[in-house]
Image (cartoon, one colour):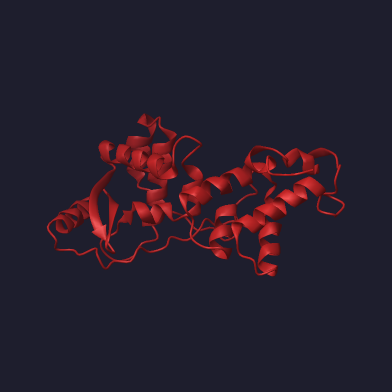
Length: 236
């Protein structure tokens, strides 16, 4: 589906100029580029000192979960490997630390300020144990994607749920997904499995309206979406 266009009020993310002038031309790994852009995006929303982002924090965002991982590799594994390439390239600084009583990997930009901050962290002069990860805002969009809908209406994403969301997004039209979330909220059943059952029912029986009735032709034909992981569960 083609991008619908940017909203009237656009927010911009700061990207270092050297990324374009000295780095991008030599980068061939799309996942590495994605990882670095996500880091720039999250860091641009940060305030205070030090400006850093954790791996757990990145994995908590729907757009990141959507961009990484496939049927053979988890989103965490792909993201971790892509960030490691950014570290090897000298774009990012990395340290494994304990944050909020959990092990985490943190990343800073390889700037003078970032190098000084990392040195202070490694010396124990900056305690990250009590530092709560800030939530970066979602991408501006007139229609929220399936990951944002899940986080707003159900709860935190997990890698397993993220894979199911990807499959659902490939299987059903965006409007069906949004409407299914709305129906679940209206029924006060905030469970992903309930939303899946709604989508499966619509695909098998139609939605009962003119545009999505059973047997409709063209792109709105519900049988077009009876495929993939969820299609196997549908009983005719």
